[in-house]
Image 1 (tube, rainbow, N blue to C red):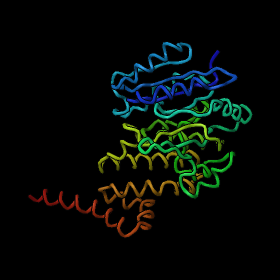
Image 2: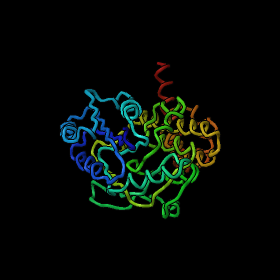
Image 3: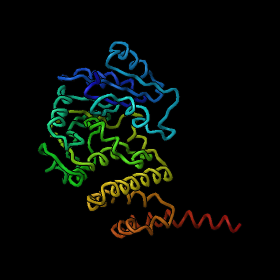
Image 4: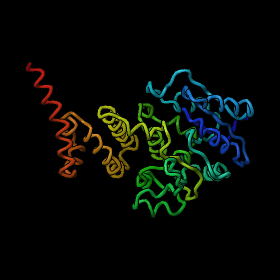
Length: 322
């Protein structure tokens, strides 16, 4: 018999945290069976050894997937390529290797909503944000003032309302596996924020349910995390990432037949602004939606944008003449 839930966990150089993460899966109290798929992306710090120990101890529950070469650095989508195809569950729950669950009934509560609401395709919850650097724990939501009201109670929501959240804890994600089969090929196009892409495409199919309960813990400022790596990006890398995000949001808009266009356009604004602040091309500045964002930039932001476009082009022209 297949398990009800497949937990998919991505790990990379998280020796310090992976044990607690796995333990939080194993302590789940459920009325159904679940499996744990852990993908390690060629860790070099001993993370694989810890995963292997747990897999040997729980061979009927834990399925390890070890890479010899790092796949993320090659642009491979690890969840889509290695985890989801192995999942046998009716539902797929996500959690990164440095985060963990703090509610032993998380899966039980979430599956109960799914089983009684077939129109629900995606569930997430509030959680805690743990600042690793400053050793501080705080509520994950709300992160900004406009989220305060919608984060205060458990309820169903459509994509427009969900987009009022700037960021939600990936460790709380759970969705119907069958929804993956209904996704277009555009879903598989590389995006540096795979969790955001998953959230939007799946909620766009029908609706989501939000638990106000704090079920998970998201670690911030951990060494080697995706967030930490973003802070080290050069201009070209940052531009590529923000361009990928904007393109993904546009694909979601098409996928949902522009039903949530206003909310998607509003959500795009900070990403389009970041794109413009890192571009070196006038073409980006002339694109319709980017022109609207540029018009609403501050004078200083406009100067920065024009400076990055004009100066590199001017320098190139000088070298061409020599």
